Length: 426
Figure 1 (cartoon, helix red, strand yellow):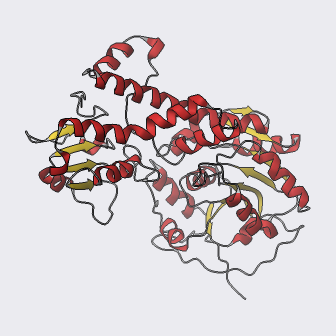
Figure 2 (spheres, helix red, strand yellow):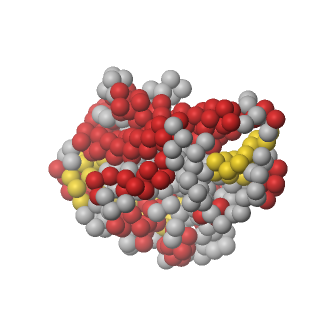
Figure 3 (cartoon, helix red, strand yellow):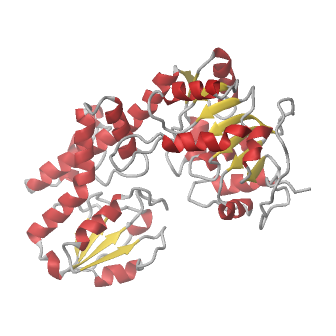
């Protein structure tokens, strides 16, 4: 008989072996877990699984990467997330968190949280095929009576579509959509401190979602599924639009030789009506641009404000290079990019505009050097080497570690974030 492929891991640290299981689902079988998190090794799923497990829930984090399972099983977070590693070790040791790559675990849970969203394809349209493929793969493991929760960002109407999918496949489940709202890097703090939006296709589903998320959230806000789907998209697009406003203001000021950071200080200093105006910088990552595209597609590409925001934010790397070309002979110079992740103090490079900046610069300058204190990739150099060999240094991701750097005289520093406190005019 094969052994259990999940990892209940009470004997965990320092390593875990992920094994196989021979267990067949049966409608009357009692659940082993309170919930299974599908996509449970990722940036959204793993902190969520830890949060529930730390509140006494019996949780299984399910994913497909056996290497990452062993890393997590050894009590090590595979990415930066404040406070998570200690909690991870606690819930592994007390047995509240199991890890598995076996989809059979879905059949052993009362509730299933699916952490998968709707990406955009190469034509920048929402792509529903990954959701269909996931459902087809896991179809045989879903059980009548389960609570199924969609967790990530989805195209509006996806919850209704998924409800019909379960009916078509003769599965009687309670379906809910409860969007993730946390800022990457602060998951445990925000899961415990922010209201949780819930929605469901039935009153019973709403009740069960309320009971589930009340165990980790201080407050519950109830919406219909379409309202919840739009609330998630609107939130991300609102932030993206704010960043675009700041970046457009920066470009306007810079084109006229004015330091936007001085203007920003004057606008926001003890003046509450514009206190939410962010500073300029790369607005990137796996969500904001994608979700703006989804909202545009949902509105038949008549989302003019969103399209303008995308042009501004995605165009910022090109703007920086164009301005540098006006002032310096880039074709004879070396340019260094400090920070390749999509935001400060993160090890996540997904959709980072630093890579777009590198690509644009590679056509214009003699050499491009890249460095990041949180990423090690082929071709990257350390910070001292970058500073020594770069004529122009661009601060692309303002990690805290960079703020104490001393840039030698004669080097050109482009600090659009104003992390060094000297403003920025290009």
